[in-house]
Length: 151
Image (cartoon, rainbow, N blue to C red; front, side, top):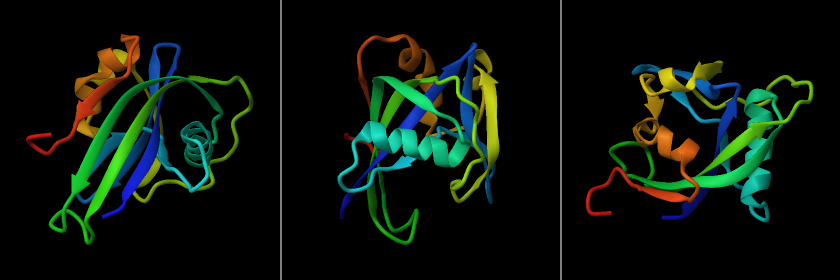
């Protein structure tokens, strides 16, 4: 099973966070913009590219806030997968936004949500929602673990 790195952006601007709004068979949920790292690409390059593709916005990574890993088995998807999520706190660069060119599979748009209300939203993965204050305010990178027990 190969490990896939994914760079995710916590974009904080004027007291609000930007999320991809998604709809699946389970309903509406929100996810951080970002995605998979290509071979030979730095995580920060992947982050900027993925945010631009999904939102049309330009960001500057300020610090690595958290690392989270997810291992899904054949029951959850068609293939076994091990993903490493690197969550960066980012600031929005004041340049005119472009049109998103490549949205995620379930993404229907994006939404700015007040930081206080984001803790009540249906965020994926849930560990992001549960740790938002630490991710935004803590000065060090934290390991969020995995949904798998014993990790």
